[in-house]
Image (cartoon, rainbow, N blue to C red):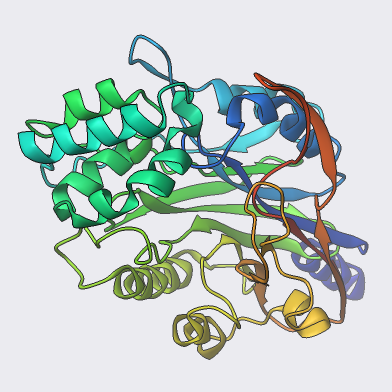
Amino acid sequence: MKALITLFIILGLTGCGGEADLVTYNVGLARGFVSYADERVEPVSQAVAGLEADALCIQEAWLREDEEGNWNTDYIDAIKSASSERFPHVYWERTKNEGAATSCTLEEAAELQTCAETYCPDVSPGELADCALEYCGDLFNASSAGCQSCIAANIGNSIEVILDRCVGGSGSAAYDGHNGLMLMSQTEPLETHHVQFTSALTTRSALHAQIKLPGLGKTDLFCTHLAADLSGILTYPGTEFGSFVEEQKYQIEALLEFVDQHSSTGQAIIMGDFNTGPDDIEENYQLLGDAGFSNPYVEANGDALCTYCGENSLNGGTGGVTIDHVMPRFPISASQSSRLFDETVSITAEEGELSSHLSDHYGVRLIIEQ
């Protein structure tokens, strides 16, 4: 009888065999920053609903601003509705990030408006950023950090609305301060937690859910999206750090502290778009390895399979980097890791039927066998 009780205890801690299937995916529903967000939300939602994963970390399911200036959860609701049978349990947090007041001078606003109206008169608000940066990039880069920050936070609106808000100051981060994260699972989390990191321009957070997974038993999952290095197009607008790279380093350190605080199972897995990897801001990525996290996808593929790639139709260019990760911190008997959602789909846009990738990122799957 004692042996039988011991067996039940072991099974309760480690699960009853099987495979744990985990996915991270940046869906790129960043209206104004990534093209065709409205047109892609339905195929993105259907793709997520078709996953057979046990848990999924979503990034960039941002709030959406309507024509009256009200922020809504349309993108979040679309994904939740399509996936309600596969992932009935969805954890997300509504965040705010007022930040420091930012503004453009009247002179800055007038020059930018004249340029945008000259070169991008018939461009929709959702595509305005790409056009304006192409033709008015020098003016934008010459403007103050506060002006750049305010404009970036209000992308997705017309040039008139953006500059109306930014002359005189707008204290909000992009997407009304929302973090864009969703942690979805087949089984109900046993506990959940959230942390918001210090950040400029875009709110950065991490979600935690303790979930019982096949083959693993109780496991601590962490879902995050860390600061990107936008120094090539934007002056760093923050005051807490000297650069986007420094801000990201702080966020990784804060994430690791959050993980240590809430890892009670001995099995921690962090997932998300870290905006760093073995081929991008390597010194920050190394902090994760130093903390004991492994990366089966990178170990299997090296830099052969980027997750943010120039050949993606929503990016354009060449090359690519591996910045989307599923990283466990415990011994694994065996695993399989692969790239997801690198196919194109047909979408209907103003210009007609188009072939587009689902997102500007590809997903990463990790199947853990214990």
